[in-house]
Image (cartoon, rainbow, N blue to C red; front, side):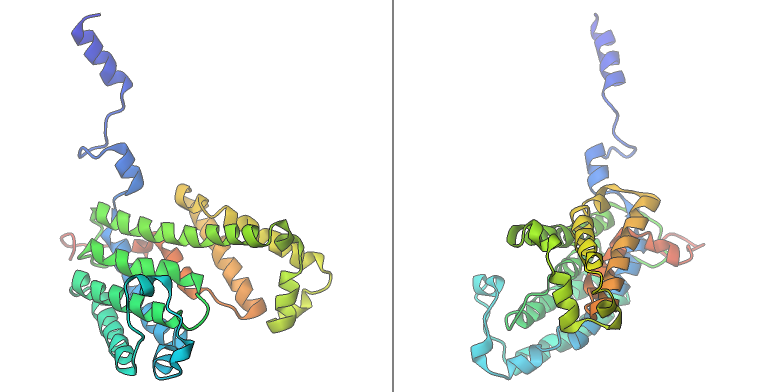
Length: 296
């Protein structure tokens, strides 16, 4: 076989990279997505962060002026040698988060304002969870505040495709999946199969269940089936990363439905995680495409 024949054979057997010279593995890992998708998600995330510090992780200011003996810093705060918060520190964080979120949600100075929010919100959340339980539903939201500023400018009607936007969305998606999957791992690690076959849901319903939740106490197999169902969908959460199109949207709807039922039965919400589930959806379709130049 001549050198020319060998070269031709190699060209036929080795797949060529996608247009633009981007390797296939890179295109799969960080697909180029419309900048408008990030712009819409950015509005949702930053506005929710404002709501979060006033409605959910809303005890930072009271704790900062309360009993210092209650402060048990998280590992992150210990590693960074961050001080116990003072009331002035808490109020400055609150102002910085609100101001930064409003600027970033409006698409102004997205890298600078986004970085301000990322640093201040991480500080805020780590303080709030150094006085009690750690809410695992905030993992993806914290990751989102760090990932979104890396994209830079992104307008609501800009359909320009960007790998940076794809990378940011992937980071948020990985955090969402990790939250669900590691929750299943924790259930099996500490409770084993007994978690699914036990009475954890029945205990929860008798403790804080709504009328709907208490109505499901009898017969007991209903709640046990629900426990197996929760364990199953959390274990299958990595499918969110590989499914595309309607199958992915259907699985997102399953998770949203799961959270809706949890709230209806126990008044326990996972809104930070639900907001981050938007990273799996084609949000650019919510905004009409610009008819002028790209980015207008």
